[in-house]
Length: 507
Ligand SMILES: Cc1cc2nc3c(=O)[nH]c(=O)nc-3n(C[C@H](O)[C@H](O)[C@H](O)COP(=O)(O)OP(=O)(O)OC[C@H]3O[C@@H](n4cnc5c(N)ncnc54)[C@H](O)[C@@H]3O)c2cc1C
Image 1 (spheres, helix red, strand yellow):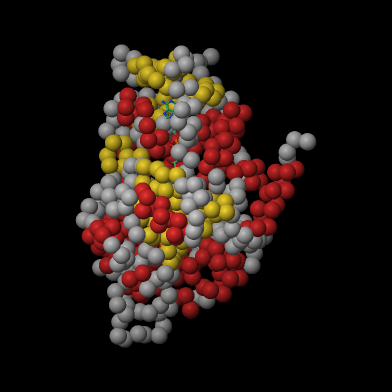
Image 2 (cartoon, rainbow, N blue to C red):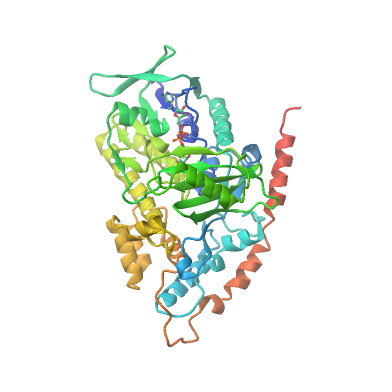
């Protein structure tokens, strides 16, 4: 019998517990020993409460139903991110970036065609809200779940309490055989070849393993501090490096979308949970002090008193030069971070773990598989970064240095320059993205939503022909309204979850 594969994970934030669950699930038929160690001195970061559809896939992969986890983690559904106030210069108050469902394939074509016509100067509708199901469900506060006689696959994300998700995943991982140690890693032992041999804790343990997973967050304990892997900053593209966080009372009608509102030196999120609204202001400390950011967020939330507690955070944006080095892989904030505008961090966690499992199974510690993994992950992160950078570059806000500096920022990647140049030249964006794509999370529809949502169009043509509006001709509005009839209100679905979880409580 072969020895079990020993995996040691440092860090018990969402990344550490997602990695532990995925690995335990994937290798459940083999012999493995997973140990997760987290220090009692540093709490998990405790933000990160909006997801992409990847979190849905994550729970499916580890075999947990929504009825099991959503009520326990105060979760709601998320079909969109709504961007408010990013492009007032174009006259657009807000637009949405939806998660596309199987049904949206039927309307995407009309949307892209109308965008093309608008780029030629024709006055046709081009707002994503009008063309995609998410826009209608969001307006009606409906859950993205349809009965089985409306058989379209739905994609959606969630809003959730990150601390509760961490606890839920911890309990589930322990039930799958993962060992959890509350210990402070103080020293790292290396082999003669330079690989990591063991973690030594302040409490006197020695945790030896074959594979080490660095989920130590911004501490960057193994990859950066021990193995010396350099960190490449994105600060020249993305100026934000701080956040102030402040919860408010839960809303009566829970929205199914996150709202991201542009403020004077960054943007504020509003994430509806069943227990509260998570609010935070992500800003650049080069342009705004922490006190001013807190005051601005209070004003934005309409809070008159100073009695709602605020939490201040600093973060850095960038990524490791290598995500897998020797026998160590970094996952989560330890591998990099692109600020939370599109809530992509947990999506990247899932992809990194899955890619690692795949490559490791194919080639163990071979340099060829490690290099391919590193190239893939880097590429993915850069594609996401470019999409986020475009939100800043295209802003049309007139209020102050921060927004002007973002608009004038020339530190753009070649890929992003090519995308913008193709759009403004009125050439075919979908073909370019196909060529550039690699492992990009954001496809042609997402780019069209962003560019349309900002009103990034030329002036209207003098000659307006009358037959170019695919929204009208294909009766998209009536079609989507009809589809939406199949969906229940979010309130009724969440009430059903509550009943399920009460029924499963031990008597
Ligand atoms: C302002 C902000 C908003 C965000 N919003 C979103 C969002 O909406 N959506 C999204 O997907 N992501 C978001 N993120 C990112 C998200 O919070 C993280 O990706 C996610 O929480 C995973 O964090 P982590 O597990 O990598 O790190 P952490 O939660 O920081 O966990 C680090 C762990 O390492 C442990 N540790 C550190 N040092 C030691 C040591 N010496 N010994 C043992 N253990 C150690 C700590 O105890 C802790 O358990 C946001 C991030 C920020 C900063």
